[in-house]
Length: 201
Ligand SMILES: Nc1nc2c(ncn2[C@@H]2O[C@H](COP(=O)(O)OP(=O)(O)OP(=O)(O)O)[C@@H](O)[C@H]2O)c(=O)[nH]1
Ligand SMILES: [Mg+2]
Image (cartoon, rainbow, N blue to C red; front, side, top):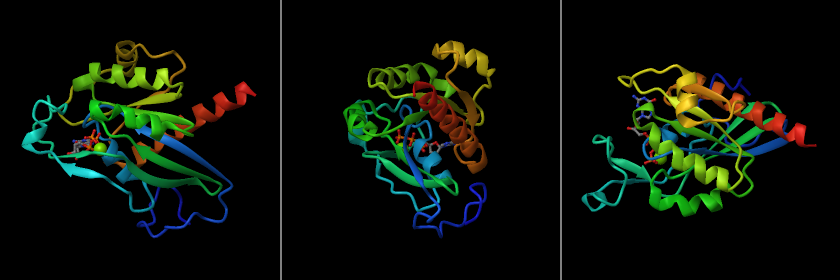
């Protein structure tokens, strides 16, 4: 098996025998923040995607504001897997981003150890609803800024304040198209969740 950083061209479609622990994680975030892109970047198996083309019928129903170029949207979930180290497999479930699909999260969140919440600073206020849904369901999370080019860059501390995050909630930044930056954020999340688990024992 190659290291997690060098993706083995998606030839690993079985779970390596060395894996002794598996963890389910959500990749959450509002419409178009890059969840499907993220799962595609990190997954070592060909990810399951449930993309549908956005049609005229979406106008006024879907959360299109600010994303004129977006042509597809997730209607059920994304699914991918990554063996983070030889003994630990992560199963990633990307949520659909549109508000009308929030009830689906209930199912997707079942059994999840935690969530990575992606945010886009150009529409940061939209993250509040996502964070509230997770908090209401007791899902632990960390936050990662998906840095779109052309979007203004803010210090992470400013983003932390804007999102009103707890001091110990991990906040990282990434480019959802860049595997290495996505992995860094995932590792931060997993360390946070394991630490939380340990401290609750
Ligand atoms: N420039 C840039 N574009 C990105 C990045 N991440 C995603 N995109 C683009 O942004 C668009 C939306 O990305 P998706 O991955 O479909 O977003 P999503 O969160 O899954 O969207 P929904 O499932 O509809 O909520 C796509 O056209 C991506 O190619 C990024 O980091 N930088
Ligand atoms: Mg998607």
